[in-house]
Length: 74
Length: 555
Image (spheres, rainbow over the protein chains, first blue to last red):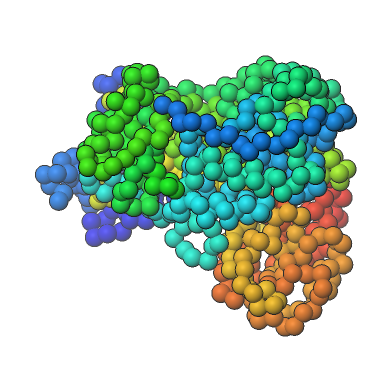
């Protein structure tokens, strides 16, 4: 854990490629709108699984920073 | 463009003598010749038929993994490959000009061989051919011998061969079809080759130049020098660099392989001033596919004829050499009457698992590199954006999962381990290397003592009880790894080694008394916390494909 609460160890336990593949497969056959909608639902479910508001806030901050890496992250 | 062919030195070719051969290999590529040498080291005579008389055109397979080098060491051909090859273990991944992360495929010392050497396939073939010529009584290499027909019954196969001296017939107890991705044997036998074809096209170029690029695997997403999605660079011997450019699905292969199209792409990387020459280039698409079964009666498929993958991960050539490593000891045992024919079915079982693993890994890499929808692109770009800051994203970032040997745990030749070790190697794992000191004080490598025959690998802290080992199975090689310096020479029948740095014990997760049964291809067939003659006998029978006596548990 870092001070912002996001885990630094391997939360995928060596199975990152399988996790990525399952996310890609989840979108098979969906159009762009449906894919965006699916992602929103996934985020809601996973946010509930995380639960801790501080961790969620740190995740949101990381995601926002990475959206415009050139402007904010350097 | 195609470089001039590299002819192999001619052999005088007497006519094929009459009589049934134990093994005929179709295809004198890296896999076919590795098979021939492996069989010859086991005393099995082999005929190798190749339809032309040149080695590979262009560099083709260039990245040879540690495990492949270790197999070639066992066959006496590892050192020339390493001497000529370019050694590397570091990969770096960039997005544009920014380095996202760097990985080390072998971040520890105490191994004889590096993670990889890069060596053009034509050199690999030339060295293998030279080694094969060390076995003139056992290996009959025949160039310009094209198989035109193959028929088999339950006892063997009958091959019709077009030769420079007309048509000949050769009979074989077993045929190894190592005739490549477009395998004529596979076609002749009408075997389907199901899989997934990828639309993406790639330009591959070998450029000879004096440049100071590091001896590392360099991978770029969104490279600044190329409008496509990715590029990959590898250094080869002779100042040759391999550069892969991802071109997209709509690229025109004929157009893109023209030197006047290729050269500006290369100049964009290296600049205008570096003198260079284009050695070879090709535009390719690829597929991931495999035969449903690798063994069809007395015909066994090995290498690209059995399975093909994308090139990202170097799993094609290395997978094929591991096929040879897995198959040849089994064939030798069956031919010598020391194992039932059913042992060959375990080649299909074990290498089928490996092929699935290789296909899975290379397909996943391809998926990452070639997002096909907006959603896929968002995921991919999200990973790249996060990777610089967040370590978890670097685990998702997939620019190639490089070839590693397959683990064989749970398959039928391995003896299940009721108490698998918490750390170190387990049943089915490929043997790890470690520095050792022999009884005469000479420094060497553990892997030099493993592979070849079945071997008992015993960890000990003293000579007590070692006498029993030699009595267990005459003919079984015994290697004893001592945690302490040599207590004299307690036995003539065991190879005594000192684990001076403790690395062997650590890597094998072994304590005093731990015993491993090592297969002829240097995989662990069984592991026991202490020596138990009855259980070892069972494990040895199982590993050789023979019936296992039922062990009655003591009440």
